[in-house]
Length: 88
Image (cartoon, rainbow, N blue to C red; front, side, top):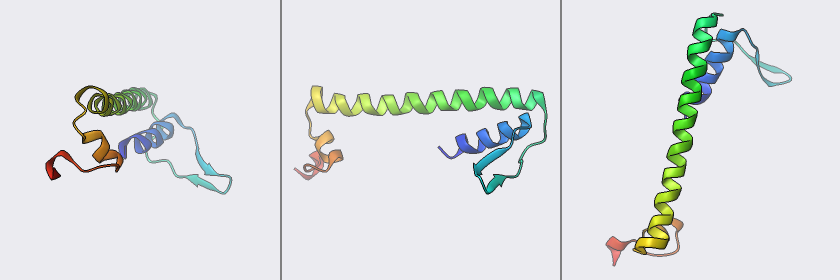
């Protein structure tokens, strides 16, 4: 989660694009302008974004598995609605 914004910033810097946060705040480039570096960082940024999205989906699936299949109280404990199975 921390690497994605930094990779995006470096990717845009390598592509020669300005990173405008607000109308008054433009971030300085953190990478030299280089088309090959831009292409590599773009691939890396996209791959890590996909991996993060897959990890979020996996966590949602695990939570639903505990809630609907196992019904073991883990989901309730995570949601703050009950005690964890170890406390019982």
